[in-house]
Image (cartoon, rainbow, N blue to C red; front, top):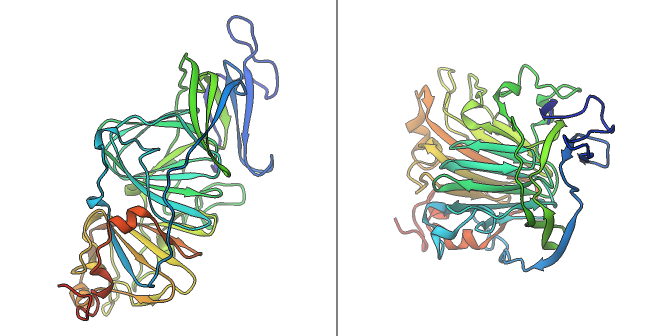
Length: 394
């Protein structure tokens, strides 16, 4: 993260003796990225964070992905996804894969049950809360989350998700790190004046979370698969920490849209960047104000990227009449052009405001299709521009 935070009790000097009320030493742990050369946090544990008493391989039940063949634009309906036992679905083991490549795995879950303790040691995670409320308990402290929240969970953050009601979550699992676009940050990490959000919009843990428990299981995703560790003591035993690496929350409603006299390209909506992908927020906004402007996007080809768009609010003007609803996803792959639905250009002329909210993920390697995408595909979508042909069913 681009700025320093201190939570709970910490000593005046790092790497010095810090004793508990009984006189024993707290166990210091450095959480750092890029081999001690980038952001880090220093945590103080009541017990040794290294004390494991068991380690077992856990089968990875994720289904295989398949190529986007035949190549075509596709649409999926997360609102139509069903789980065998809805009351038992949690935000970790209940995830279903929509799309993935070597850099990122995108999934979806409608969670109602408390998740197991979990740690993703393969990369950062970004959770987008489409609907519902809950608490994400982390080793750094708890985070209260709700509709519209992006939650950034750094690599190897131990956490669990406790829904208050059904939490509908788009999950983004990177093979590296996720953060604000570098062009929005100074050389020292401060948000710059042209950034569409800043430090005031970010929520981080504000107090420690200490749980007294022994023999505690933690599910860990790592580069070789899944392992269940059993720890001698609960990992939520941190009495204090400080640093620039921690989980944080940013709500999409706090994104300040960048507008212009004519249509602005997608990079103005960028919110995060990851390894070979970006995440953008399309928010309610004043639209183009040139007297001859065309507010909806022009037809375009994704020459170097696949475009994955999750529609979460309002009515997305460019997709009217194409079957896209709240909870739908469009996938526009490299290799074919896409643009406004028939009639959307004329209908947008003279508009002053668009009431639409969407989360877009552009990947620079092709996305494959997961089981959840295949199960929820709207087969009509690819033909919705022509609205005729052997596959069209109007």
